[in-house]
Image (cartoon, rainbow, N blue to C red):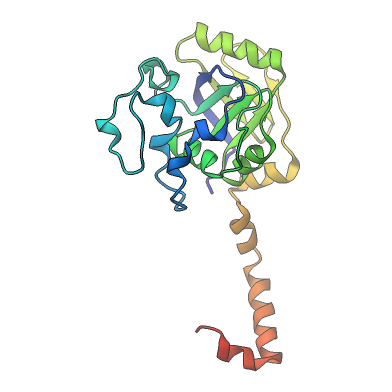
Length: 216
């Protein structure tokens, strides 16, 4: 998993409440569990004017010119600004996969659905919950200033706008540690590989018959 320490990026505004996971990555794209290839179908029903199906060439589809992520000023955005209850609906982990593969590193909203919030941390995305009035002010700034960027400093737990005071946020200590070090659940487990090997060696020494049923 990619580390998240300090990130500077262009902000794109998703000015909708209750954006659910089926809008983030529609159900027809959930057949694959490879964790790759989902970015082209992020917000598929909103990004394109024609119906989307797995395996389509996005270059042959009709983009919706009115959708925010298709607008030239937001090309290359890596911070998504959203309204309350972002990521509600089903618990599909494909939603943070699609956001990350599209290029987003951080999400800012007044609130997130619980399961989606947890899945973001497990996949290298940083979801930041801020008060409604702070998020509303950011929406105003994004619309007023083309090319609006933010610096997100996870180590210091603050957002640094181009102008104005720093904006503090909080991340639970263990989640912050994992993001700073690029550790997902598998990475955390592999840190104990020496102890795991020692346990397996001891187990086989005391129960050697297990070796006959284990692959080489």
